[in-house]
Image 1: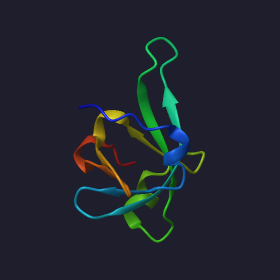
Image 2: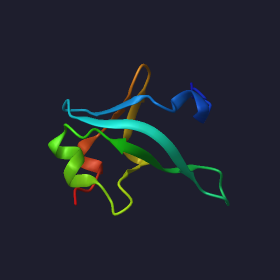
Image 3: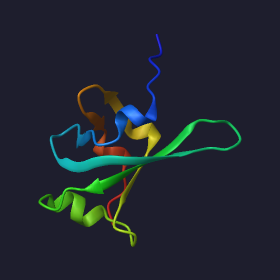
Image 4: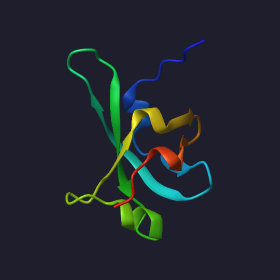
Length: 86
């Protein structure tokens, strides 16, 4: 069964990798205008995380593809294999 979540409920949730790295906090989502499907999530990086520091883009955020998200509950879990490090 698919669980639908309102994006507003995700803002501020901690984002962690499946192997335990804290990437930061969810701040925004990139949605396809054509299909309405989630493309990427945008994360405000955890400044204490070396992994998050390597993944920051020029605008200071981390972009994680939606297909890397493995779970959403008290936090958002992403598969580290599906994300690209800078």
